[in-house]
Length: 474
Image (tube, rainbow, N blue to C red; front, side):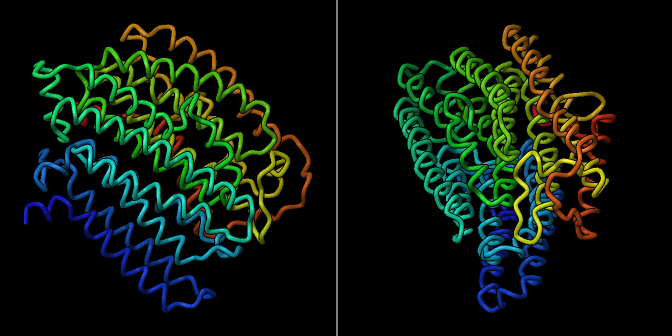
């Protein structure tokens, strides 16, 4: 019973998702309201169950394969909150297109379940199971828009490269298991720290694990799938891929590299430092040349992965908490940007070109302001939350003698500001090029307003989140 109590949010989510799946079989496609609200109710109740676990003592269950601690409870709550926003923004977009609504919401819920498992997993096998549940859900979500050849192509690319990444990660885990004789991350850390086994095999395994993680994150040079998937996938699916999974990926890094392989930090610090520098440089430089806003946001994601890794390479609690703060704030800031694109993509029209945003302030002030807030925050301009997020990860990198990576980060922040500010110029100073209706439903407008206000408020009062991040690694 103790095991079931610890996994209550995940168990409820899984059962409720199966119920939603069954209900969708008896609901006509032209009446999607019940499926949407039942999916949102599933996320909301699971969020309440996760909130109830915040502050509880760290404990493991299921023979040490699963557990909760300060980090997992906070991250699961944010994953659920961001997913609620993602479903809200995606509803009208899905209703306007030939995307199976029941399948979309059910696959999204299964993906959220996979993320929650990744966050709470304290065993390599459990991490892999959660990762594959998420990955398989995302592959199917990208392919749901069956009338789009671009979506089908993107799904095939995502599946092939995702399978390659999973294979790399699994091979690295098997090598670590061969070197230590354990799948439990705490036991692996103890064995490697005590020197009870040779670390040569573990170092080989670490290399493959880093490659697998870099593939999943989209870090350079393993980034080739990111812009094609963002561009080819339906915008609602691109939103889902670009937000909450980044929080789960951060948790996976912490579990594998910190909980299990922290004694090898001297090895993985330099690997991650190189990946971070390359991601920041390549992501920002290639984003400048994009005229498709989804591809621009994809390269922006690659650059932000580099900043996210800055805190990890510090290999200390200050750096880990800084990266946790970065992952959370990046997720809900990107959520706002994609939410505006989804609001503009009405009646079957796809707002994907930069020119589609021209003159937006004259058509819908709220959408323009929210997009402006998101772009300024992603650029790292004070007083928005993106500035503080970049500040703390840069500070952590400098404090751990990785000054050269921090210098690259500062330089690339200046470069990145160009393409973010270009969007603001288009929205407020250019005339509309395409007469797109810029009308969002009342609940979507309210959600975007709250989202934009949160980006501003948490920039002024970052301690509202930072305190929980620091406590997670205290």
